[in-house]
Image (cartoon, rainbow, N blue to C red; front, top):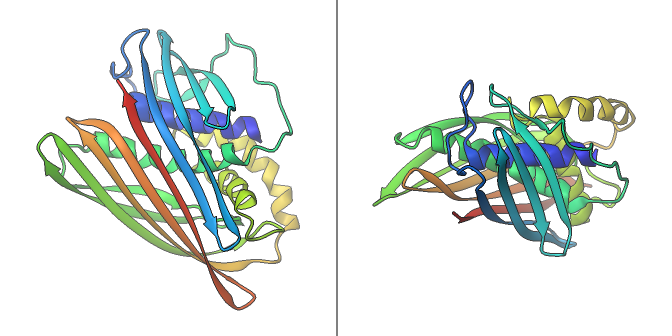
Length: 279
């Protein structure tokens, strides 16, 4: 599961960083043999505490359609994935590089990161494609905390302009049912389950769909074992993204999950941000 999460997150941010275009060579947002760097933050807040992470994402163009994406967390964890962008805009592991080594080590931070980057990439790519528009619609899935049913929505992003800077803001709401982890308000366990949900439901659409297949099959048996214990979850998502001179600059998202547990209402707040730092 971890390799699917890492690859899906890499695919999403590579698309956001290079603005991969369908049936065309990616435009030279990252120049030949150049790099682009982003800073990220993530957090899950519950009444039991807060799980947070931060770090740097570096996308380096190697040659042709080959890229290396490195995620370096501020806690010292580093992961590099070699990727190839196909002519149809899809992203796959570089076949010339050794396959990632599987590991069963817990990686809740990577799972939360994947869920966040999936949404950021979906909204950010749409912003770049519609930079001349006053507003645009983004189809996406609201992924609940825990292991729950996603909510398909269309989020309307509305723009405002100040000089060369353009800001888009939008929000969406939905109702679903979800199954929380055993320690249901532990923010680390919630972060892990959110990442699994993002992979399973292919938030990235055409970019993430092919990557999610194996993860979805693996989850099927687990879903059958977890049919009970579902609780209501009212999801609210708000997103703001900025473009500078038509280029992605930053994006911030906040998701509120209002979960009913034993007839008590509990609010879980998830936040994330990605900011381009260079070039």
